[in-house]
Amino acid sequence: MEPMVFEHNDVYLHVEHGILELFRRNRIIGSYRTPVKWAKVRVEVRKKGLSRLYFGNVEQLDDPLYASAPGQLLAMVEIQTADEPLYRAFFTELARRSDRRVGA
Image (tube, rainbow, N blue to C red; front, side):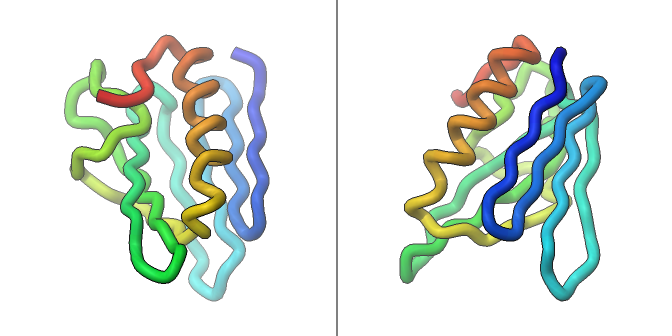
């Protein structure tokens, strides 16, 4: 799979050699790194035009990449709800390239 990069505001996503990495520019140092085949992203719409993206690991390897079901969550990013389609497009393409389902 060719490397992929998604950068928006304070979020930087990088995929290379089958590894998904999330970096956030904020006051709390932290990142998320996992094999793409284990990755799971869940969106939760909040109030005041904000949404949260939760990153974690799937429970079953055939679980979708971008889903609404909760699971083991390891990182969280707060984004503008209006920007969610940009993230969804990135994860849809990542799922396509890695032969994963996008959602349930």
